Image (cartoon, rainbow, N blue to C red; front, side, top):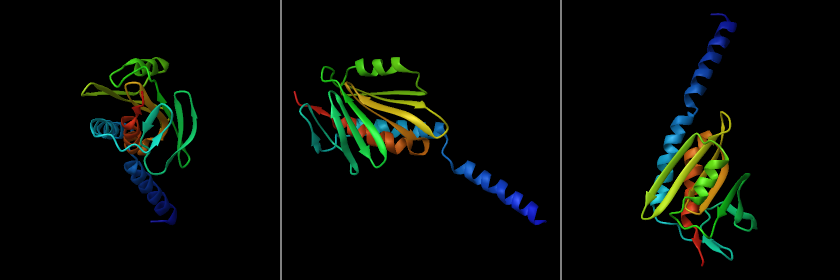
Length: 169
């Protein structure tokens, strides 16, 4: 076998290997849905942050970048998350979910109910590697852009935050 043929064979094998290793969107959607449902049904994490209106939990590495009425901009490294809350809507409300659904078409729309709470996971595929993810419970939602390969882990962390939100009044 000539060097050219060997190089071509090696290149083709590498492509096949890389294609097999990358997570498919469908597989990651399934994993994300399962992880989010588990986080939704689990106990809320201990709250370690608060403002005038809410208390909530931020996982290690997350920090508050900015606050405005009904919104908290969170950072975790280079990633940005928007935590939105509507004090007029309880954990069973569909108002925030329905308003979000009217803004665009989502590739995944999963809903969960437990003990009077409505949870949801919405995923809009932006391209092969990036997705817009929104998770929420009633009047609380958190949104971020997430790589497909990190969909399950990111969505789960986002649901842990949403599940921890407690309105002060």
